Structures are given as C-alpha cells and as structure tokens.
Amino acid sequence: MVSTVLLSFLAGVLGANGVPHFVRGITKSTYPSLFGYGPVVNLLSGWIMFVLAGVVAYAAHVADHPVAAFAAAAAGVLLMGLFHAGIGAFGRRPPVDVSSSPGR
Image 1 (cartoon, rainbow, N blue to C red):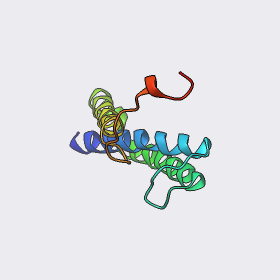
Image 2 (spheres, helix red, strand yellow):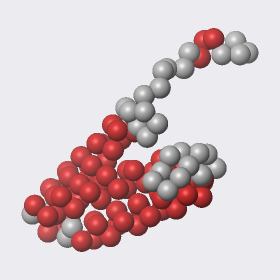
Image 3 (cartoon, helix red, strand yellow):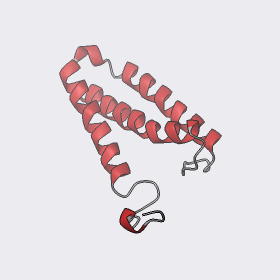
Image 4 (cartoon, rainbow, N blue to C red):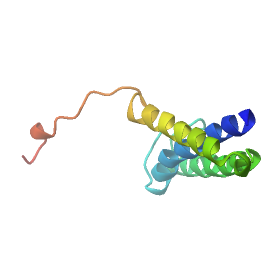
C-alpha cells in the first residue's frame, strides 16, 4: 500500500505540473521549464509529464487500494497547484493594480 500511495502522489504531482507547461506551449507563451522557455519546449515538457504521470499511475496498481491512491493523487495535485498559485516557477511577483491600467 505504501508504494501505491507514493506512486499515486507522484502521478498527481506530475500530472498537475504538466498542465501549465502544456497550456503555455499550445498558447505559444514563454514559461520556464527545465529545458528552456519556448512554447515548443513547454508543450513537450507538459506532454512528457502527462505521459509519465500515466506510467507512474499504472505502476502504482491503483485498483489494489483505490481510495488511498485517489487521496494521494489528489494531495499531489493540490500540492502542485499551491506551488504554482504561490511562489510558482517565476517566483513571487507584486500584484497588478488593474484600476490604474491604461484605458480606465
């Protein structure tokens, strides 16, 4: 059961981390990744993370302990979401004041 929980957590982290990279890649935006900032690099990084998440989830034997696996994967997704919502890949940035933007 321990391996199921750990691998499911890792699958959740990988899958959640693949989302911003994949989205930045298909929207042709720059975003830091291990191999660079360009859209193609991010698209490939996100896709690879999705594939790895699937492989790790398969290796976790989720069917043996479905509730524990789901809880661990959900915790991994939440942790990665909090990372990206907090400090994220770019580090902390000051909030944008929309009331002083041009055109208002």
